[in-house]
Amino acid sequence: MVEQTLVLIKPDATKREIWLQIIDHYKQAGFFIKKTRLIPKMRKKDVRKFYHVHKDKPFFGRLVDFMSSGPAIALLIEGQNVVEEIRKLNGSTDPKKAEKKTIRKEFGKKGGEKHENAVHASDSLESAQREIKIFFSDK
Image 1: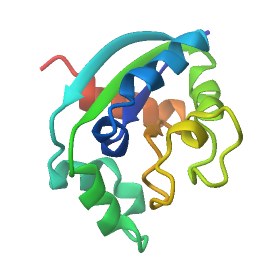
Image 2 (image 1 turned 90 degrees about the vertical axis):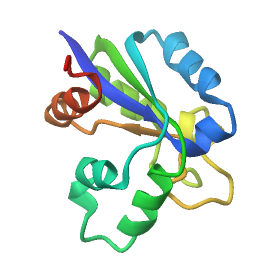
Image 3 (image 1 turned 90 degrees about the horizontal axis):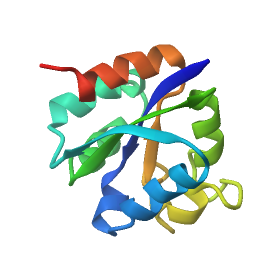
Image 4 (image 1 turned 180 degrees about the vertical axis):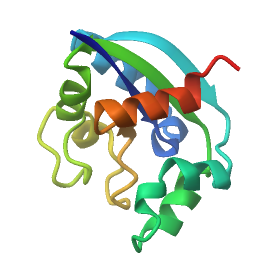
């Protein structure tokens, strides 16, 4: 069954101008990028809403500041078992612990904070549906 998921290329990757390389990794892995959207700068209130599941964690404030610090690129990606497969391709959330040849190992900010890991991806089909609506709803 073809599924959809959301990937956000984070500000650390857009600032270093490596977003095309990241997109190329997804394409080379056989995923279809159905839509893209440039987000020039996320508002802090929108970041807080998007990452609400982390609101009680100690890193939440830094995450909000980071995600609102510059441009991000939203990707709507389709493929077989895409949520799980994209998460495998991305690797561990912590770039230092990510497996070789994963996006976060290759493109996560070296020596940066854990959330400076180049990409966000939906963690479930339910999250994907919610997150896709945030960035790709036909308003």
